[in-house]
Image (cartoon, rainbow, N blue to C red; front, top):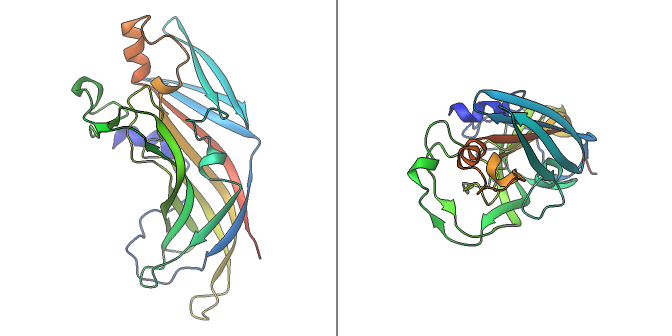
Length: 250
């Protein structure tokens, strides 16, 4: 899916080992997560890419596109926005429940869901080149946040992981829901060995949390002021990234 590629650029994890039956390091337990103190923001409108840096709490991004001043509200205090450090919190508990597929991991995380009905999208607002390429149902009510189990994969070599943060609810450009390519991934530092039966992960390094939204839900402008401008912004994507490290809590 072409639109997903900018979301995972620089990703460090390996999401391809979900069905592997080879041994994986033990990652179960509680992890303390430490974040970078900045958020890297990438806004893509058509073929134009704008990059900005915000503080850890988010804020306002102002750009000028084709002569139009545009403002995007990326305030992490907004109840409908999950910034990277909220989608992947400061303390997480990891479970490995399947002894046959040790590479699969489960983490309970704040996750967005639709409080209304899921309805078919307007065919003109979805399809190739839009944030909703597969024309998935969109939420016609509020997007709320609750705790849900999310699925992750430890890489085949046991030295990385990827956790999928996307809510599985397509945004309609008014509500905000994480796009499917929102992920957290990192390198794993391990001790012991599979052969010795004591292979354990003790740290996460070079981590990257990526959360992505359709531009329309973060646009601070008046969506009824300019039909052409609205269409342009609704087709935009906003990607927020921050780095992290993790330490296993004894």
